[in-house]
Image (cartoon, rainbow, N blue to C red):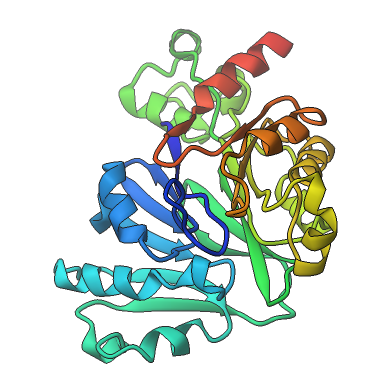
Amino acid sequence: MKTEIVPLGTASAIPTKERHLAATALWRKGRLLLFDCGEGTQMRLLQSGLNRARLDALFLTHHHGDHFYGTMGVISTLALLGRDEPLVVVGPAGTEEAVRAMPGLANDWLPYEVDYRELPEDFSPQTVYETGEFAVTVRPVEHRVPCMGFRFEERTRAGHLDAEKARRLGATEHEHLRALKRGERVALESGDTVDPADVLGPERPGVSFAYVMDTRPCEAGRTLADGVDLLYHEATFGDDQAERAADTGHSTARQAARLAKDAGAGRLLLGHFSARYDTPAPLVEEAQAVFPNTAAAEELKRYVLDPREKDVSRRSET
């Protein structure tokens, strides 16, 4: 099952004619996760073709307006659309208070529950959202205000079943094969057993994605990006503004590339570009000098993560 990453806004601080404020969608199996929610996110979701009603969780890195001010509108619109299932909102301490301060957005006014999961300034790395198929973990990063980065990772799947071998070993019933796929040992009427290890191929890794915004280069960012398939990292400034980046708690494109290289990331997307740059091309050039597999995030483009490609690469290595 493919996972799609869709940058909705790649601007830093203020929108430009070509770039919108920070928000990135993750679409998987007809369900939606949203990372950051700057002003205008609702419109960008509509333009992306993604179904906003399928939103399960919203992950906020911090409370600066370019990452946060669209949150209230999204919550309100979901209410107007008749939502009745809970919505998870992960963010820094004070998120619930800030949202509920808007008229009509207190939980007792909404037709659905908002499950706020707030993290204090000194929180430890942890899993903040999970299903049977994936988990989202969070770590604090280094910005001027409490800020966090996220990592989405699918769980490892069982290897492919060699059904022909299973049948030769006596597991001929459909239920036998289903149990073996689940990793369960099968007892046969003969008294023999068939072990999953005998009929399943190597475990298949899932895909991974790291979202690291508004931070100086830091160890937490590198850990979030460790071996990740796709890293989306802020590149607010170029080399010409390295001192300003350090002073304001941001990264340069070259610094993002060094982090991607050190972390062993597969691909690097750059975003969160300062309005001083009419085009991100110079930033991409600086980053590619360090990490060639770098591109500027294109708004509304779908970046596909396919676990089957990992299966192929793994088979080619053995």
